[in-house]
Every structure is written in structure tokens, then in C-alpha cells.
Length: 136
Image (cartoon, rainbow, N blue to C red; front, top):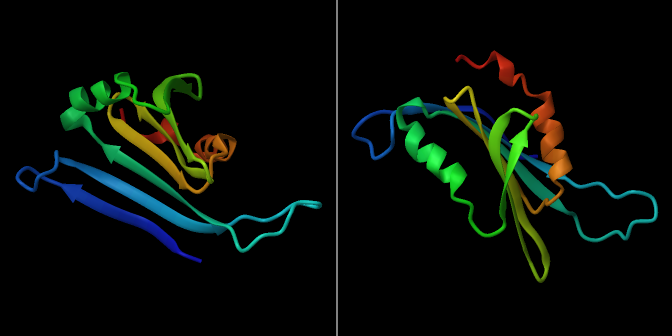
């Protein structure tokens, strides 16, 4: 199983990125089949989570959450955090899904799944996160 845990990236002025810190986590998971479901070749999907301290560039982050693109809709995550749900599908099925939201007007939290369009799974992960402990 692919597992990248606790990668921390620091951005500083002059490196082409806005200053900040990002912590990311990715995991490759195998989708299991229930009783009576058709068995196909192994089905894998990747879930990635990132938390970025975007306090130095909050204006552009906020504008990204206000300007919705195709396949995006505005949501309130956990009933309090402004966010966006994204889902991309084509004729063969699911390509990806994701949820992005802002915590404490400072942290840009993103969770993305490749080849998995069940947003309920992503919301279960978000519910398990201790977002209240992020600094204000």
C-alpha cells in the first residue's frame, strides 16, 4: 500500500509560492466489495489531505472559494466552515472528488480522492479531524 505521511513543505518569499506551511498525507486504498456486488479487477483509490497555513495570501484563497467552477458547489463543512465540494465524472465513471474549506480564516484544508466519488467517505474523514485545535 502506498502511504505518504506527514510531509511538511515550507514556502517562503521568492520561491514562487506564497509564504506558508503545508502538511500533507496520502494513502492508496483498495476498495472492498459487498455481498452480491460484481467482482472486477482490483479497484484502488487515493485519498490526499492537505492543510496549508494561507494567512499571508487569504484574499486570493477567499476569492477561489467564491468563484465556483464547473462541477463545484458551495457548502458549509461541519456547519461552520466555508467550503467547496468538487466532483469530476466522465462517461466511464468517477475521476475524482474533493472538499476544500477554510478554518479560522487562516488554514486552507483540502481533501481529495482519485477514482472515488463518494463524498460521504470524505466527510467521515473530516469529522475525525480535530480542526478545532488549529491555531486562530
